[in-house]
Length: 466
Image 1 (spheres, rainbow, N blue to C red):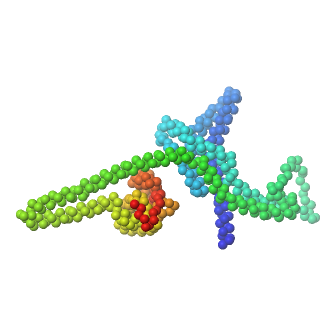
Image 2: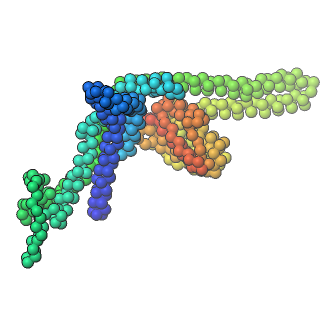
Image 3: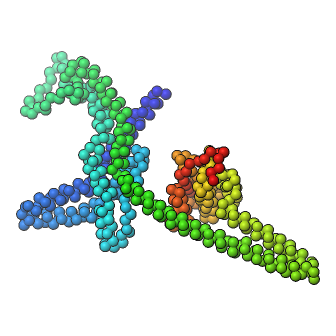
């Protein structure tokens, strides 16, 4: 058990050190366009003071390089910095939202110039430059320090093997002599001398280097995960959106979701009106005409009147069923009475394919969240039945991390993509009104995994959420 814990500890430290070096290298790579532009600019300034008659071609190529770097540098810097954000989220557990303002789609030269101008006018672009400077000046050392310490410690232990000490003197064996070296390196002192040249300190130095080297390696492996987390927080402070940018993005998001909610509500009202007009209302009108005809035939032809009454009875039953379906489509009674898990389970039982349902909720979600989750699952299951050619579907529901989480998996042919403007895109917009998200993984050949999350707090099971 102790050995497994030690191996796990060493593995975590080594992995954190490797991730830190990779992150620092990506950060330095992101600063390469800025560094190149500064170098070319300094060359141009130096060339401006020189004789251009002798440096004409050099000056022309420097101008071309400066123009290319000015035009493409911000684009590549933004891509590399976005890559850094993704790696920080994956390795450091620091989620950094994109701080950039939306850019227009560039099709022609004029639109590309407009896009570049807006990119340069975005404060987040200049914050990226600040990050590259901070990373180059010292941030990289934060994650490189454990690696340096491990190398130093291993080098200290390796020095005991005779690789760095003076040659041994064997009795009776003459040693070859070398010509004197005119330049000698300055002697090291202190801890560096003890770690790299322990023989200079006698037996005490040879034995003291062992615990010192092991201590360096241990401290480095212990500190590597913490330094990696600190590096992630430093990067998040510079690469993340400012509070003003977050508020602006939030206002824009609320404006978009408000418009989508209004459009969705209006479409739902039109659907209800259409269903009432074409369904229950038409049947009720026909039933009234049938009853009127039966009334006129009641005395002259009682048998025909009874037939019309039976027809009116069937029409009333169908109208009642359609009204129930309409009410169920607005807010299902099982959802209001028994909650979201039972309502979703009922949806699974009505499917024309095999379905497995699992999970439960420790309480009730707010009624709007339950309704949104129910109709989202209903639409996902309808898509599975119509388009996926699946044989089985799995539905899992739970509440983790302060969010309602529902996963719908099917064994169909896959290929579902919200970006193609299908119904999944509309579902994403409707969930966004609740700050919810929809993630779809659907490779060709399947399986398709649709995961929806809606932030919400659950009420007590004994307390109604409505």
